[in-house]
Length: 329
Image 1 (cartoon, rainbow, N blue to C red):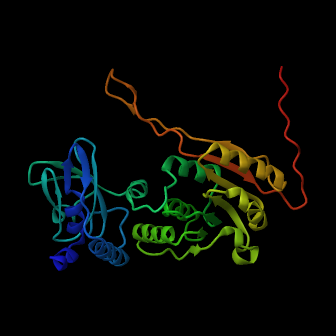
Image 2: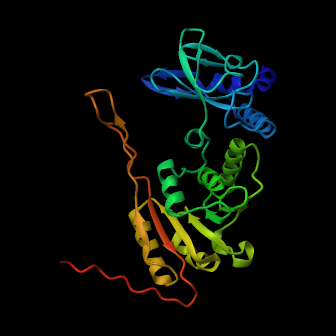
Image 3: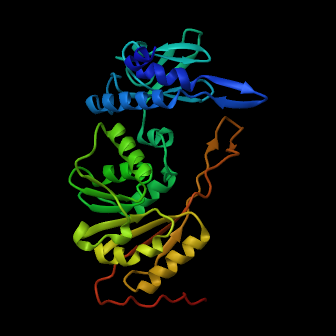
C-alpha cells in the first residue's frame, strides 16, 4: 500500500487531508504516520525539482492548483497523472485538469463543481508548511514599496523563518540581484529551503541562505548591501551590524509585533546616530461585501499583525538635523 501511495503522492496527500472525524463536537484531522509524511514530502520535493511550476499556459503535471468550491473553500493539490483528489463531494481526477486552461471548472463524481487556478505566490505563502509565522502579504507589500527593493539590489534579511518574505524579495531583486538570508534556527532554515525551492523549482542561484546569528556577522562576511530587513525578537541588538554593512543612503527596515519591541527599536536607531529619524506604522486591510444594496464591510478583517519601521543610513561622520515639531498656527 505504501508503494502505491508513493507512486501517486498527490493521492496520498488528498487521502489524509480530507479524512476528518467529528468527535464530541470537535474536529480532528487524521494525519499519516511520520514515516509516510516524510516519504510524501520527499516525493513532492523530488518532483518539483524536475518539474518546476509554470506561471501561465495550460495545466501540466507538477503544477500546484487551487480548487475553489461554491462556498469559496480552497483546496490545494499538486497535479500528477493518474492521481485523484477526494472531497466530501466525491473524486476529482487530476487527468481532468491536466491540459486544461486556467479558469476551468472541473466536476467531481458526486456533482460538485470546482474552479481551477494555479497558485499565485500569495496562495502559496498562506498555504505552505510553516516553522515560524510568516510576514503576511499586506505587510510584505508595504515592505517592498516603502523599502524600494529594486531589480539588481543586494539585500540582507535576518529571520528567514518559513521563507515567505524571501520569495517576495527574490522576485523584487530579480536575477541580477542577490538575497542573503540568515536564520538562527536549523528547523526554520529547512522550512525556508523547502518552501522557496518548491515554488521556484529549485534553489535560486542568487539566494545565499545561511544558518547563523546576524550578531556575529562582519562586513567581510557579506560585503556592502543596499537594503536590510530584520524579522526577529530583538532587532535592536543588531544595529551595529546593520550600520557596518548598509551603504550610505541604504534602507533599513524592521518588522516587530509588539509595542515594547517597537519602542526599543526606535530608541536604538536614534541612539546609534547613523540613521535618519525612523518612521513607524502598521497596515490594516478590510474587505468589502458588494451585493447590490447589501454593500457593507466584511465583519472580519486583517487588523494588526506587526509594526513596520524604516530608516535610511547616513553618510559616515554626518549628523542629521534634530527633528522639530511643526509650529502651530
